[in-house]
Image 1 (cartoon, helix red, strand yellow):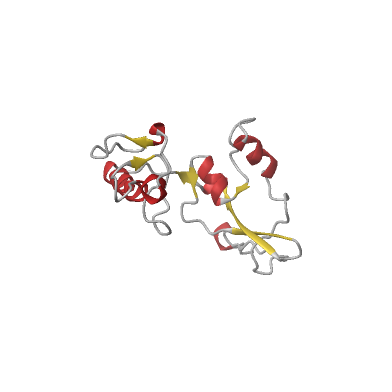
Image 2: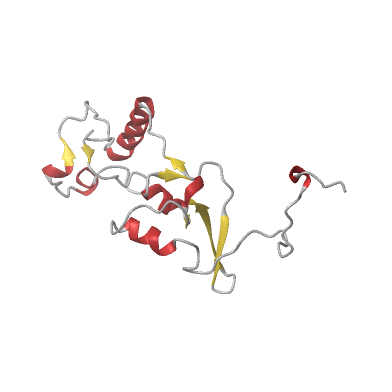
Length: 155
């Protein structure tokens, strides 16, 4: 009697219709453990599902995996879940990338008239300058950097 090798066997799931898994609200595996880890009340779970934002706060990124849909409110709301065990650590930005981000933020935080760099983004599209240059409202000296020529990296 000839028996087929184990390599020739095919595992067939009779109940698989080809659609991806769908989870309802708060029904994904490990959802409670992920939320506890985000609050700092437990360790990062080794497996389960998390959203892209949750992965980012855990120091991870999806790493090219296909997302699984999270559907709630009768299909009206959707989100994408990623498996934690397939996620990879976030990449650290290079010094050139940090310098580019600092230049971009400096452009949003520096008044074009008085050349002060504030600690927050200015409304340059609507008023075109800082509040003090626009209407004379005095700026708090602790809200801007005194020397606008020296830029330090944010990270």
